[in-house]
Amino acid sequence: MTESADTAFLASLGWSDFFASQIEPHETDLIPRRIAEVHRARLSGISAAGPVRLGLAHKINTADFAVGDWVLADPRTHLLIRRLDRRTVLQRRTEGRHVQQLAAANVDTLFIVTSCNADFSPARLERYLALANQAGTNPVIVLTKADTIDDASAFEQEARGLQRGLEVVALNGRSADAAGALTPWCGTGQTVALVGSSGVGKSTLVNTLAGLSHEAAQQTGEIRESDAKGRHTTTSRSLHAIAGGGWVIDTPGMRTLHVSDASDGIDTLFSEITDLAPLCRFRDCTHDHEPGCAVQAAVTAGTLDADRLARWRKLLDENVSNTPVQTGPRGNKISQKKKY
Ligand SMILES: Nc1nc2c(ncn2[C@@H]2O[C@H](COP(=O)(O)OP(=O)(O)OP(=O)(O)O)[C@@H](O)[C@H]2O)c(=O)[nH]1
Ligand SMILES: [Zn+2]
Image (cartoon, rainbow, N blue to C red; front, side):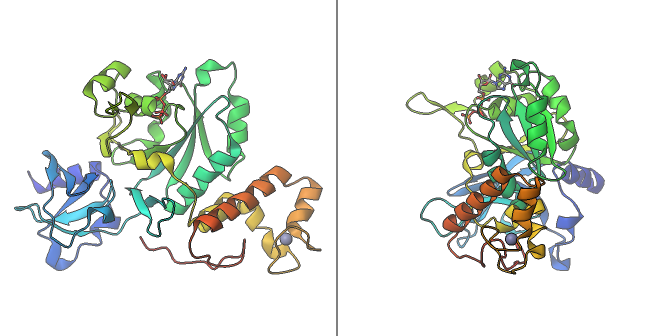
């Protein structure tokens, strides 16, 4: 392949100056590969010719890699040399474990999926928003099943109020038009991932984005498989090409993220509250009972919703109890420089 064709291919996979600038002068002979699958003893990366199995040195632990990672490999042996720094990373802490488990890397947009029915829960959406913010990805709320109600605008409006500047789309995931509604985030080289509760229509959307009919997707068994008991589960951990030229990361780990280590993400989500905190009389104000509290004053004045304040409190508590080391007093945490 010519160098320019190679560059175009890498760009279509999401390669950018952010990654190129990490290549050291002695590494110019190595080739970048994007991780498409992570297994216990095996990693596969995407090349122009399709997936390639990467050679692993003994010291390599595949758990240190996520679908979506960029690595440098030897062009002849496919030996993995090193991983490049991530632009974004979605990770989760499983109960009782100190180390975070990687869910996906270098995701540009996280589609937070919920449906226009009883699944719609501001508190749950806020959890996912905190995670997206923390990961560094751009969150977009996708309201599915808009075809089942007369007017989705009340849901759209409520969703938009959850974070400043938040983008919200209502659609019918089963219709081919859904891919069109999501094109702004799915162009060439863009990577998306989806989160949301069971049954909201994530698989349906992935299939629609991939341009597969529901039947075709079931036949390929690539996205959904049945386990030994015949249950229908999503098992593959991979990077799928989508119609508009982008990629979707669809891994089971992505779908069950819990909030932990997300205090910066929570601050971004509730910026109308964090912006008021410096105006409180006491620097360590908990915005609960203190005199001269600017947050309580906003509730009294009707500019801040009391329910929203209560959810902020609950989410902070949840984050603290799921995070092994607390970084500072509630709402006044010590800012840490993020390093992926
Ligand atoms: N009417 C309507 N039905 C939808 C829409 N999106 C999904 N469905 C249906 O809702 C059901 C659940 O959709 P799935 O795509 O399997 O949901 P999921 O989020 O992937 O579920 P899990 O794999 O359990 O996490 C299926 O019967 C879909 O056909 C939509 O926008 N409109
Ligand atoms: Zn206060």
